[in-house]
Length: 181
Image (cartoon, rainbow, N blue to C red):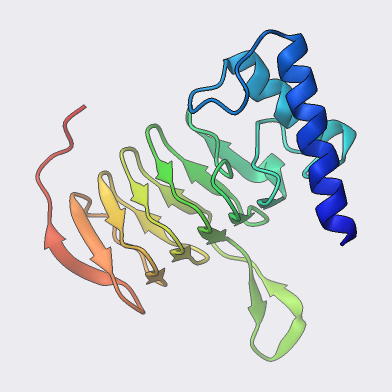
């Protein structure tokens, strides 16, 4: 009940701010300034992902953003993403991240769950696409132009590139042509 009231109040606030600034309400392509303002309000005023220096959807969770290096596309813009950068994440140019994607660079010690295991950084090379609900686990490297299918769980590296990987655990299922920019 309280969440519904809060959501209604926030929606009314955003509509008012957008009207004052002369923008269209909830257009499919909002003005960049309005888009950034929305994320500044959510992240800095309402303190949702406040330490993240790029826009993040309010339903996404970013851990250790200082260990995440990204190209021009901001990770976490999709709905419900979980990105844990404690062991480091490198995301190159033109990587598309769908909704509810998890990129988890830290793992628990299997003999003592309260301890974490150090591993290599996750590396996602340029022109990759991480589809809805896929999971990338610690130490994984994805080569250029790798598509991770929806719902796939990637537990090992696929540095070759130009491939579609799918399944639980993920494995290559199709070779792809070079990416066309």
